Structures are given as C-alpha cells and as structure tokens.
Length: 483
Ligand code: NAD
Image 1 (tube, rainbow, N blue to C red):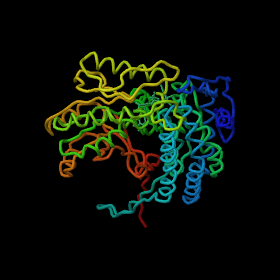
Image 2: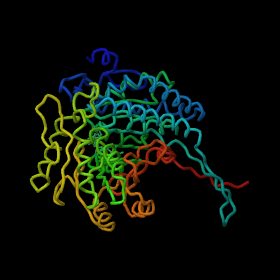
Image 3: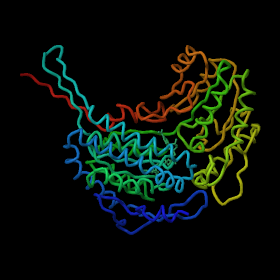
Image 4: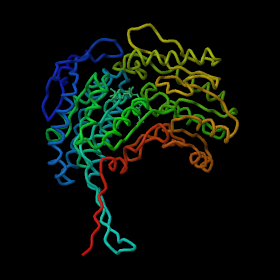
C-alpha cells in the first residue's frame, strides 16, 4: 500500500544540498505504528556527519544572510505553496511514520506550511530603532543581525510543524540550520528537502541529520563555536540536558518543553461548546500533544452532564489504521508510549478512579489504545502530575474559583490552560491568575503561527510563532554614534 509513496522519499543525510550515507554507514529502521512493520531504513548521522553539517551550514550562511529580505521571503512563500500543493503526499507520509489519522495529518500539513507563509511576511519586518541617549545626547542605533548557525531538534508528535516552526523564522532571520528530526519520524523532513530546493533554498542553508545517536551528535554541534542558537522541542527531561550542554559555549536556547494542561469548565459554561473544545484539546493527535488537556476540572453542577456527553463523543470515535477512511484515532507512536499510557491508567484505577469508557489496550498488531474517560480521579493519581500523551481524559470536579485556580497552578509545567465560561469578566480574571504561557478561553485550540507559542515555568524558554519567534534567531546590536 505504501510502496508508491515511499519509493521517492530520500533516506540518507542531507548535508550541503547533497544526499550522503553516514560516515560509518549506520542506519536505523522507521516503523509504521499501525502495523509494526518496517517501512524505511534511514542513515544514522555520526558525530563526524554532524560536524560536516555545521561546516555546510556555516559556509552557506554568509550568502543567505546577505540576500535581500524580500528574496528570502519569496523563497519561504514559494515553499508554503509547494507544501500545500503536496498536502496529500505529506499527510500520508506522516500517518505512516507517526500513526496519526489522516484528518490530523492534513491539518498538520496546513499548520506546518502556514509557518512559512507567516515568516515570509515577517522576513521583511526586521525593524530596528534609533533614539537619543538622555545624558550624552549620542544616537542609539539598534539593529538585529542573524544570530548564526542554528541547531534545531524536534519531536515525533508533529513531524512537520515542529520543524517548520523553527526553519521558517531561522531562514527569515538569515540563519542557516542543522535539523535533527526525531528518530521515530525522520521521513517527513527528508521528503521536504527536495521541495525546499524547488522553492529556491540554496545548498547548505538547511541540513538534515537524522540519528539514533542524538546525545553525542547534538552535543558535538553545541560545542562548535559557529553554532549560536539551539532551538529544541521535546520533553523537559531532554531540554534540561540541552540547556546544560548549551551553557558551555553560551549558546542561545529556545526551549519548547512538556505540558500538563488543565481544562476548566465553570458552571456557567456552554457545556456543548466545552465538549467540542475538549475533543480538540484532548484528542487532536490522539492526545500526543504538548498542548493536550491533561486534567479536566469540571464544576460540580455540570460535572455529570459533561462526563456523560464526553463519554458518548469518545465512544463514537472510529479507531484503526490512520490511512483508512473515517478513522479518527490511529495508534500511538510506539510500544513505550502505549506502555506508559497503560501504566498511568492502571495506576489511576488502582487508586480509585472509575472507567467510563475505554481503559483496555486491544491485542496487536499496532500500538493502539482506545479513547478513555476516567472519572473521580484521586489527587494521588500519577497522571495528574505527568503528561499522559495518549487518548485518556481524567475528570475531577470542583466547587469554587479560588480552589480550581490553586489546583490548576499546582504543577511545575506552565504551557497552556483551557477555560470555559460564558462570563468574559471571569474568563479574563481567571486567565490572569493562571501561570500558563497560553490560555484557550472558550477555545480548545491555541496553536497559531501568528501567536507567540510557549510556556512558563518548566514548559520552556522563549516563544515560537508571531514576531517573537523571529527574534529567537536574531541578535541585537547597538551602535552608539555621534555626527
Ligand atoms: P524527546 O525529548 O524524547 O525527544 C525530542 C528530540 O530530542 C528528538 O529528536 C530526540 O531524538 C532528541 N533527543 C533525545 N535525547 C536527546 C539527547 N540526550 N540529546 C539531544 N537530543 C536528544 O521528546 P519526544 O518524545 O520526541 O516528544 C514528546 C515531548 O515533546 C513531550 O514532552 C511533549 O510535551 C514535548 N513537546 C513540546 C512541544 C512544545 O511546543 N512545548 C511541542 C511538541 C512536543
């Protein structure tokens, strides 16, 4: 079924605009999580290959940074159009390597491409300022220069969008990049490279080095003085390691890390709208999203209605191979992820949670886990503290605004929180008291290329998207002058 699609996907390293094997000829397998079958064998970059990629990026950067902003913008704009042209091909490829159902994959292609359109528009808005020093009267002239070669490290849950969200602003700023995609899902980015060439990206401006040896490969790049930015999306655990590694050479970090999103439904909420929002916030990408609603707090007056309606909607989702018609829920990405979800549910049930639907993994093949709703989840359940990263909704009830804010904030994460209420005053009051970088107020989706995406506390440092995302790849230079 995949042969036609996979036949044209490159599987080697992409360095300096050329495809090459790894220096020690190592490769690793990519598995389709719906069938557990190997679908491709990809070159696994060595430390030597990583250095070669930084060499290529460094050579290419001078010419790229010197291009007029409009020229860089037009390359990005063309890339946006080409990705949209190829939506179906990219969507199917993502479903094969990640498992997500085709509607999720198609939505991701559109979202991923949109970062190139947005940053095509931002590339021409690198604006500085001039002012007069209050005491000396000298002119303070401020401009923003491309920061240098950027190392980009991305996770498997959004194989396209997490990378374009970094490549777009980096290229707009005039930086060149070395991208290390997740080992579970390297194919999407490899398949994108011929498209980027067609859009006009010169050799060496984007390099892609999949690797099973992520630690040493990324470390070696961060030790190279030409690397000035590390932009990482992934777990807080790996983010901490990269922050340590970045410290040695004082490399500028941008970190998009884990989340533990509360989803709060007040008694004055439109419950049907809250259910629609919950289905997106919880089930987009099978719950494998950093923005996934992890803890549902539902006011005691509407709790039973919400639980009943959510259970019905979850039961109606068709599960299966994400390539099949009508399937909304594909498999999880790998066996470890499914084991983790299973263990978290078992722990909650052992401690007293009741299962309203789901809760039992089917026999293989495929790393499937059913849509699950747990009610009356006790505070001691581990899944209230850790990212579930699966299709499991954990419900609790609450009675007062102060109580729910305290409980929602009681986490080391601070990525996103969702709030449903018809009272906009309450919505804004509660939003301001929530320690989260993003709030979905009567919305189950916050991701938008035009908005600053990012977290507080241990969910990250810096922002992606919006104008702020561009600034992550720029350095501010000030010239003190007089004439
Ligand atoms: P992960 O941290 O395991 O891996 C992310 C990337 O880091 C992969 O490319 C991996 O190969 C690489 N990596 C792993 N160990 C490394 C090391 N020692 N040194 C250098 N690189 C290393 O995360 P994952 O399992 O791929 O993705 C899931 C996590 O990503 C979740 O925690 C999720 O919340 C987070 N995430 C965050 C955002 C966000 O924007 N905040 C978005 C998507 C995913």
